Amino acid sequence: MEYNKHINILAETLFELLSEALGLQPDHLSSMGCNKGCSIVSHYYPPCPEPELTLGLRKHADAGIMALLLQNHVNGLQVLHDDQWFDVHPARGGLVVNIGDLLQILSNDKFKSVKHRVTANRVGPRISVGCFFSGHADMLEEPFGTMKELISETNPPRYKEFVLKEYIDKVLSSPIDSKPAIDYYKL
Ligand SMILES: O=C(O)CCC(=O)C(=O)O
Ligand SMILES: [Fe+2]
Image (cartoon, rainbow, N blue to C red):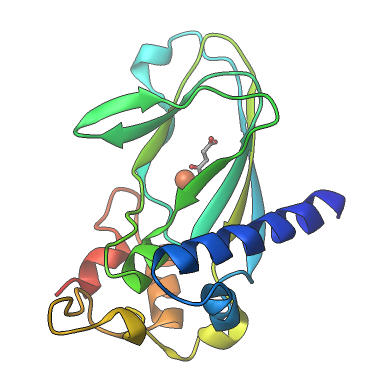
């Protein structure tokens, strides 16, 4: 699919910039496989007659590595910052880049995943298309944790190592509003 092809090119560039921001070679995150395992999830939020009584999507942080989100012109996406919700107004032709929990772990909290939600709306529908990167299938059976290159005496790991497959099983089997999988691995 044409869109997927462009998203993958963009993701490659973003992973280069993120690697450099961590003081690593530009191809570091991609060579680990972070730019692979892209799944596309689309949401359709119909207009809601009583939006104050519900939400479009509950508060959460994305569990994977990174998400690139396209939204139509209808408001609804909000991010949590300093205990306050802020609207992420749709920008024509713009994409939202969300850091996921796995990138927070890889970077030892240098990059923080963002808590977000979608409010319900009287107008609509609101439509979004998210491209979620969860990493190359080869990473599934390998130990996963903060990148060794980032660990030092002054920057000890904040997460214990785990097997990615177990983490993903936890994410997929956890009931709504239960403890996020990342919290099981915090040291
Ligand atoms: O619909 C949106 O804008 C957000 C979707 C989302 O956060 C998700 O699928 O994880
Ligand atoms: Fe999300």
